[in-house]
Length: 94
Image (cartoon, one colour):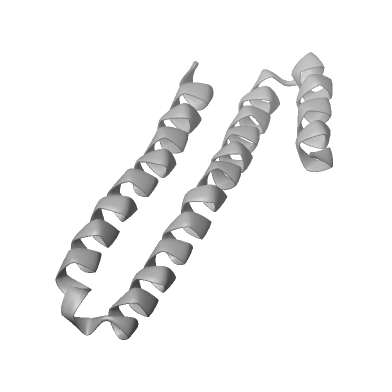
């Protein structure tokens, strides 16, 4: 959180002297925000795939159903990352 505060403080100081620096700071903070938004889906997908592989190893006869459910879960979790990317684009160009 301190890094985000430092970026905002730097943007405020730079915008007084150079308008281009404000755009650079806005892009940096938007990239930082997207990086934070990508952590959750990355952890979720890793946990989901790990548990799915474990379930397929325990019951190989249910592998098809587990795989289908895994791909659905990955799609829903990846939607969170895409929402974060859209917010990143809105912050950058708004």
